[in-house]
Length: 460
Image (cartoon, rainbow, N blue to C red; front, top):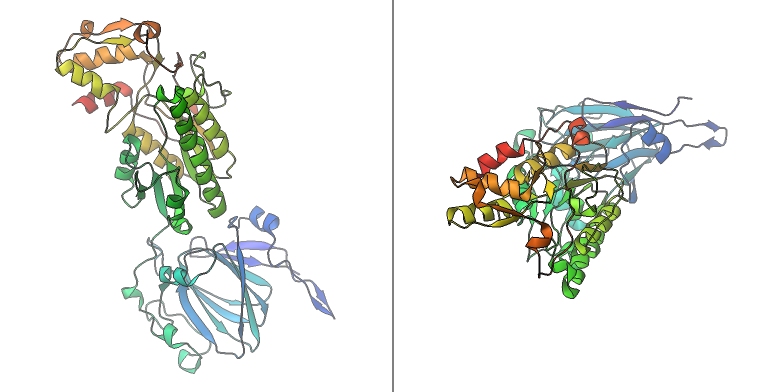
């Protein structure tokens, strides 16, 4: 009796499992699905939610070729078949075939977008297959089909197709030259209308952008309207970020509603559909007493906004596949500190700017690129600090540099303390030090550009 084993095929992700089938005069037994053993050998932990059975009364019954919008594990309860698989996903292996004569001692893992076709070689063949999404009549519109007799792929069916039993629908499927590859699952960008969201959409033109007011994390109905079964990644760039307003009675409720309650719904959707999630976090989860913040520093938020972001991070960390991207001082396409300082410089204003808060700017083009790098390189789940590189600066020093780049004197910016600047105003407490350690990010293969370089480019 063979040991449980898994082998690869010419089609990426299509795996053949050899199953031990001990037996005696009474019959046999097999572990048709054993998550712990199979995933340890390399089978994806694909999370099946439905088990289907089908029966072919006679030899020659032939079905396919169907590429379905989910993963499946196909095996036999009885009989023997000839199986054929063709990669119908976009890429270099589009049109690649693989065939195998399959008995009860084997199973095949078929990834989403790979077409499968089966020909019964014995009467009374019973198929069993696990799938990781629930079948529905609507799901059939997402299938991609290939003709069983396609001359390019040239499947060597043991029983000639003219002698086989084939449905009229299967006989009418298109040839390979007419097949549109099955599109990969989409990335969803939540908060696509914000500074970071716009940068992400620029880098991910095929992403599904979710913007207010059509999409609202606090409205469960808008979450339910998204076709999550066809989503491969969620990037949450949405947040309540009105730091000072969050200290008010209504602002406190609004901050928790978006940053925690709304996010918790998104986390449960990601869990239910096994979708990896990117959560954008903040330096405000720390009190700023440490001069340099690492990813493992315990939470110590000073205000309501930081408290909600810390709570959100803790929620996301419960997911098996996640990236918490912690950033600070974000600058992009929208209202922000650099744009405000440039406007003041151009209008001849001489502002007072806080000089006792320290950190680094983060330009959204690099923040978005870092997120794409972490997710596309399959970096380990966890928290990653992500800002631009370069020396730590105060807000006042950055403002002075902006003035210089606009042709004004740095001395036109007056440096004041946080206490002086906010005297008589309602304000949230700020961390004094917001500089984030980038060592883990660099180890993951992403080295962000220098903040000074990006500042010059941004103002240009």
